[in-house]
Length: 222
Image (spheres, rainbow, N blue to C red):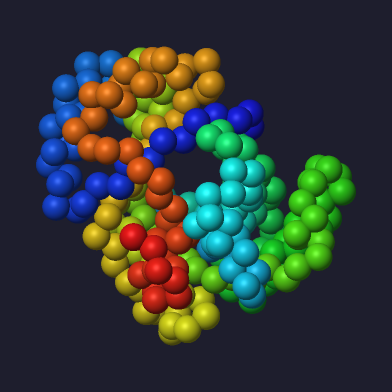
């Protein structure tokens, strides 16, 4: 995947009706895919280096996770994902795994991708020199839209988090923020800016990983 913009808008669960009314005004908006449940497990070092880089606003950084989907009570396979940020742009490196989601919580991240590390020419020294273990899991429902055939919108709701370090396996914590994301290629920046200017909400830096750490009382993040 090429680098693209990903603009995030956190929205209180109490303001969902405002978003619904706004989406109804977009005549060029249509459903892009069927909604589905998304599950993520985020990996980090013992010193939470990935989280700290995000908090510090380090422009070039990587977020590490395993993702799988659920639709009609059927689970997909698990993919390891390296979410690579370069300034304001993002891209995602997806590496399929053969492991089941229930086994992810016992894994070191590098063990999941070591067979592909050289083949895919992954340039990530941290993965070679540090131990990345599962920290937080989240789960949410995602709705998919597309605006004017080339600007994607996703809306994540019913978000919940749990710590994989301190809580029991069933101890989910509900979030009171949903997240709208607007995703587009670099050449669509002007069109996307016009759409964003019409939003009844303010764009803001937002990380579901950091949000999960905070809700699970593993970090301070608003």
